[in-house]
Image 1: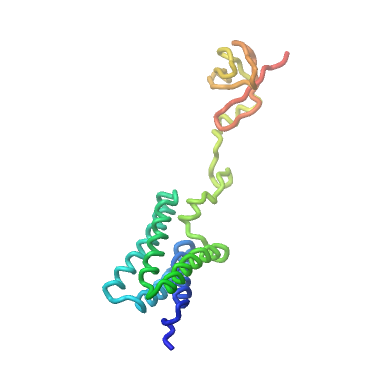
Image 2: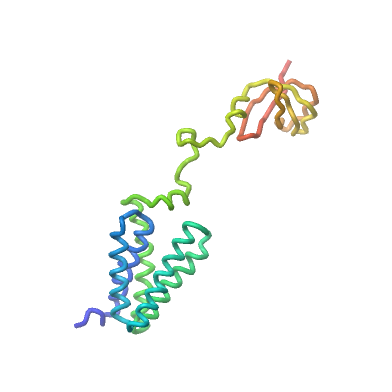
Length: 210
């Protein structure tokens, strides 16, 4: 019996093809997964459609994957990814010889695409996805610093208000002027204050108790 006459075989072929192709997009397998994925998808379309339609369906399918990549790397709002998935599903469904086989093929794409994310737990993630998901923490150890170092050094420094803090105003510390905010208190002009906290470039001060 011809294996391609089985209605469920499309699920297996499209599932494996999508699994490896999306897997290649997610993890760095040096093209191995891409070759496997292209092989399975080529076998699927080659078994069910004529030469002219075969090329057309391949273009639609791989255009769908390209849209997913563009969405993930550039747009990152899910719109192109949705269109890409729809293109992939449409291509395998239209290539199927009957409705049942088409349904199996669609399910195969969905299952394969979902299962491909398990590769992230085993293999090295591609750098572009690492940057998109902001996996790197913005820490001093990683070379980043969200707080201005000059402002950070102001903690516990003393200064004087140049105008009323209501609760925001201007203070002077070591002959330099800064925008500051009191802790919900009205602080009069020419009042000695101390910096109690710095968040980024936001300076929180309090009156110095006599």
